[in-house]
Image (cartoon, rainbow, N blue to C red; front, top):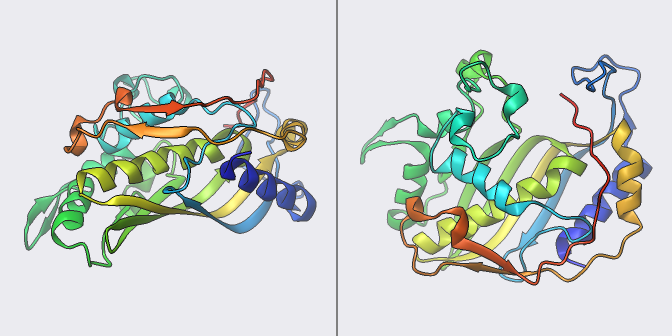
Length: 276
């Protein structure tokens, strides 16, 4: 069983056994048939992943990590807010007729800001500081721009990354306001683990800890039986994460710059409904 499996099981058991249901409240999300999508939740879950020890991917069921990396590159490299630049259909229901998701996600990372050292967008400022100001406690990004929320098709869920250099090790905190545990938990963990590895390599550092802070960690009502099935599984050891060592420019990474050796997830054929 991978460490990611262990934490997922701990989190989901805690939510199911000790969580709070919102069935007595009006909720925004709906199922495809129009039924309100209620959840059981825990507030303030914090998970720590040691990226120097193993890659944090589920083996209880398959995480389609290459597609997750595609989305990560769409946001952090392309800094795009148009699904036509994305090699997946995961954002289709939130895009308008032009393919735009509004001033969300990649759009926010690509907005340039003026600093004493020059003009940078959020990603390039992180890259600059990791090389030139590694002792800084100000190396972070934020997608939650209140001024632009009304022009976003979906408010950002994973909204902030804080990077911190300790010696020659790069650590990071991922802040998330909301987390659908079944569909998105390991998807996001996998993405931002890859991001930390990328940032570390191009900055001459090694990847350390990824700390994942979730404000509202929830399981949807129709997901409960599926989660309970996963909790009965034993999983497999974590695979080995391999990254192309020759890439030293953040913008030269592609989805083919990464591979997992020995990834053997348990088959999971159930269809997972998505609340919108």
